[in-house]
Image (tube, rainbow, N blue to C red):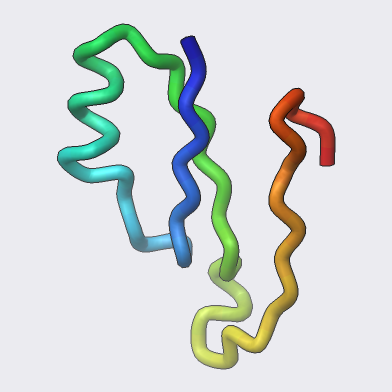
Length: 55
């Protein structure tokens, strides 16, 4: 099974939710909305991937 974890920036970790998903056998795919170089000025647009993993 797969789980998509959306983190808002480069310092946010999946935390306890990610840990529980891993315990239950999920493969995590972690995507970041605000990259490190935009951290101080995060006015970004973001396209969520499709359910099949496509962009």
